Length: 407
Image 1: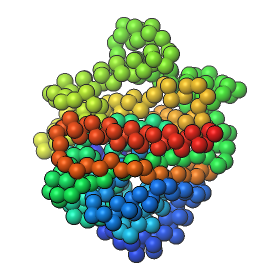
Image 2: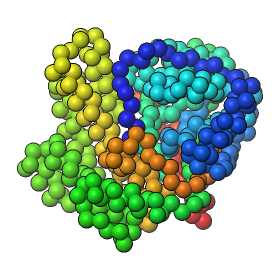
Image 3: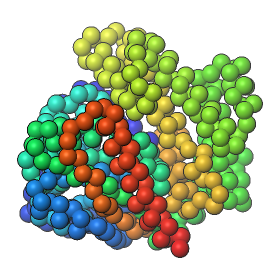
Image 4: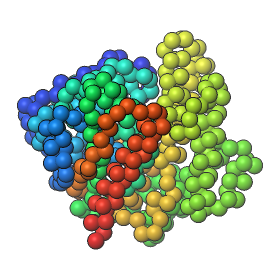
């Protein structure tokens, strides 16, 4: 998982979207795409659906899955071909961590910042205005995180559809919400490089190195060891022993992970006096981080309290890691892409790598599906229902691309 800093952002970064600048930046973008992410080619599908809607006086919202760190290259390859440059909601930490020239390039491609750990009115108003008054495609990643689960679209956050409904209410026109699938395939065999990383992971947790075993089998054994390590860290010995007694099949491991997440989150919420408003983990994490940032910035905590708040942040981060562990993701005969994604995740979580290293050349596919049209404001239940329908459509697109590859 990405390890971002959490504090009050120093500023809000607006978009400076420009078709001219997108074209001028294109050679640099293609060079970075190949050098840093080893993406040899990008296939674009269904863009004519977006182009047709832009000509019909509707707001255009694009909701891709967050497949990996190279997603922006797939998006810009497609959206650069449209008559109006996009507007792309981007975590403020991305701007903070980028060097100035690259930060400017992102802004020229339509990126603007969002503080996901707070109620960011500047980003909200900018997004609503784009959908309310312009034909520019607004891109929001509804999952909010890179979970390294390219074949599995996780739950969407409610904010995406809330923005669409606010724009419908103010603009008196519909908003077309486009499901968008991002997917990667290897064109080179990364197996030797992946095996070397698994060896380092096994050594990190003190496991016997099983170099002759299949990669998926080694990964499954590592997952079990990782869960046991977290159980020992957060559960009493009797509770950890009871959890291990449940077994190590996929269902049992999933249950143990749910129990671990609950214990970790409840311990933080109790200490910070937070009453969860939902069982949805991303929203609980948002409220925890928001409370910690506010306490750190407003109350000038002493060294002891600051250390405890930093520990709470780390525990919240571990809860997000646990949320991304899906034992059944490697069930059956998993593709090399699933194996590689899981290794990338563990490399970041256990080897201290900020962003997983790139192994093997890839090709990317970006596909747009038929839009879900929002033509009237709705209740919170409507937001949740439409968000789930949109998530399902993105999943269907991904399943179709994967089925073609397997065929």
